[in-house]
Structures are given as structure tokens and as C-alpha cells.
Image 1: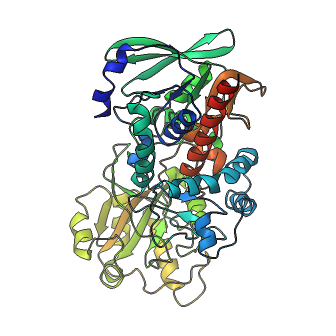
Image 2 (image 1 turned 90 degrees about the horizontal axis):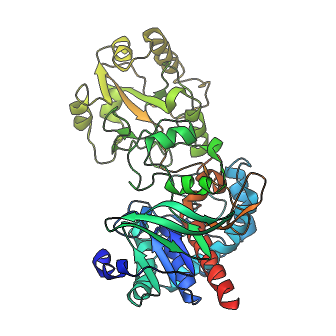
Length: 483
């Protein structure tokens, strides 16, 4: 175990060339690049193991102009990637940082492949679960995020064994050490007590706040519904950066998925299951209504971004999937791996599944106005052979046969929209744009709302985290070697 391997190192304090706070995607990449550039690195993490969100993430990557694309005959470029990001985000990304990212990402992806990353055979693809790109530049490993972790781990472990990288798990950074306006080190807390470490540069790479419901609501203005994120994503790096004079941005770009079925109303809750709401995979037979009992979107709209945007405007980002016995018997499975009998068995037993003999009774069960839901269902049934006012085209059956069913779906997010503001050199900056000397930030700590904007842009979390980590680690260590 790495923690055991490093137990003797806990006695060895001292100065380093670079301190990296957070041993996740970006932190591991920065440590690797800095060590290869000849630096002596201290890598800290509050968890007892490295890897961060790679232990739980889907691990999708994106990059334009990669060797794999060329081998597949795909002519693509970083500029086209940037144009797609602007389109999908509706112009809400930080174009300066996004431009920097897309330029670095092709070489970063090629570097992963050169070091043993095994790409799933169907890749590259245009998209999966998010709004598709105009060209196939989306990739994933067979073991999701752990496929990326395996590469980083394989490279980093020898550096740790040789002590070029001093990795200290279960070390929480409780404050930054400052000399005047410059950050010169960190204070840590561990089972061995408190300690201080110094270096010319400190890199914050400790991830988001999407496991802390208080920080999530404070910074995103929304309730943290799902407990699906890495448990150490508590916003610690945000607080450290602000304490040194930095500021946060991007929280206004919060975005949610089209929804998950949670295990309970005790938020944050584990996810129980995912309804299949992708019309390209399964055309919808059911309708979706909001807390007012009204339909709000064409359920078969091919744009996932449009469906998510519609849910974002609904009260609490909650919808109810409404259907009847005829649809339950005739439609393809609504939930992968679940039969009609499974849905019946959960109804009125599990809090997210309700059924009743009438539409009015169903409305009462889920807490929406009965008269409104009855009118909504009647209006939908009357347009089956006509023109749906929301533009839906797939309407195979009416909702008219008891039992009537409703499944509660929450729009969820496992990303942190707000992040520390940095400049093009990844230096943490104050609100006047002046850098905080000696302090840098990378990874999701920059905020998903900065590189994805008000949308989900596929691969724009993990790939920039790797790219910025590799570049910053090499740059900082290289500058020390030259001085």
C-alpha cells in the first residue's frame, strides 16, 4: 500500500521545488511532468490513495487532431473543437482557457495512448450522453476513469519509489504559508500531527465541491441531489485559493442532466437507476411533467442539450415520467435491466415510484395539481393523431388505461461549476487580474462552468485536467532548473 510505503517519509520534512495539493487527474499529471523535468515534488492528498475522481468518473476524453483520428481518416483541428465548444455552451465558456486547452489536448491524448491507454474500439465517436460534436473526437477507455488512472499510476509509482516524488496520503492542507503577498508553502494535518512544507511554487489541484451539500448550494445555488461524486470533493482548494486573495467565478453556469432516479428524498442520495431518455436509443412512450403538472419539452427532442435546458427552467429541476398500464406492457424497457414487473413492484413502495387507478389519484400521490395533470394527459391524448404543440413526433399510445404511473426524476450534476480564477499561465488571480505570487490552480478546481460553460461539453473535464497538469508541471520545474 502506498501509505505504508511512505510511512518512513513522514519523518522527512524539508523544502521542495514544487508542492502539489491533490493527487487526482491533474495533480498526478503535474507531478509526473515536474519530476521528468528534474524537480523534487511533494504530492499531497487528503485521501488515503491517489486517483481522485478517476476512481468514480466515466473517464470520457476529447481532443481534436489526434493520431487516432488521422488513422481513422478524420480531419479535425483544435480550432474546430473550440468552435464546437462555443456552439454547445452557447458562448458561455472562457474562450481564453478553452483555446489553451484544445491546443494542448491532442498531444495529451497521444501521450496517454503512447503510455498504454487502451481506447475502446468504437472510439472516436461524436458524443455519448452529451450534445455531440461535429466530428468524432470523443474517447473512453475500457475501464472508464480507471483506464486513465492505470496509465498515470504506472508512470508515477517509480518516481515515488525513488523519492523524486514524495507522495503523502491522508495529509489535509489546512492553510497556505505566505510571506507578504507570496505563497511559499503549506501547513498540513495528518495522523502524525501538523507539519509545514515550503516550495517556490504551490499548485492547487484538489478538485471540486460536489460532495459537500453546503458548499454546493452556496456556490451553485442549487440543492445537491445525488451522492455520486468523489467523497473528497469538498471545496477545500477553493477556500485555500480565496484565503490567498483569489476569487471564484463560473457558478452561474451550473447545469444539470436530464435526470436520475434517486434512492430517497434524503439529499444527497445515492442514485437508484437511470431512465433511458435518449431518443436515439429508445424513443419515449411516456410524457414528462413538472411540479405544476405540465409538460415542458418535446420528450423526443434529439438534442440532449435542449432537453437539459428545458429541465433547468422547471421548479427544483424535478420531473415526473407519467405513463399507464398499456405503455408499461407495450413499450421497450424504460429502465435498463428492469422489467414491467419490477416497476410495478416498486410502485407505492419506493418513494420515487407511484401508481394510482386514476390520473387525479396519481397527481395527489406525487403532489401536483390534479386538475392540471388531468388536463395535460387529456391534451396529450387528443394530439396523438395531430400536431403536438411542443413538437413531439413519437406518440404511439394514449395514456388512458389504469394503472397510471409516475416516476420521480431529479436533474443531477456531479460537477462543480464555480472555480478559482486563473490567468493563461494558470496562476491564481485576484479580482483585479493581478496574480497571487507562487500559487497556481488546475483541474476541476478551475470550475466546470469555465471550460464547459452552461452546458455539458464532452471530455472537457478530464482532458484539460491532464493537459494543464502536464504543461504546468513541466513549466514550473523547468523554470527552477534554469534559474
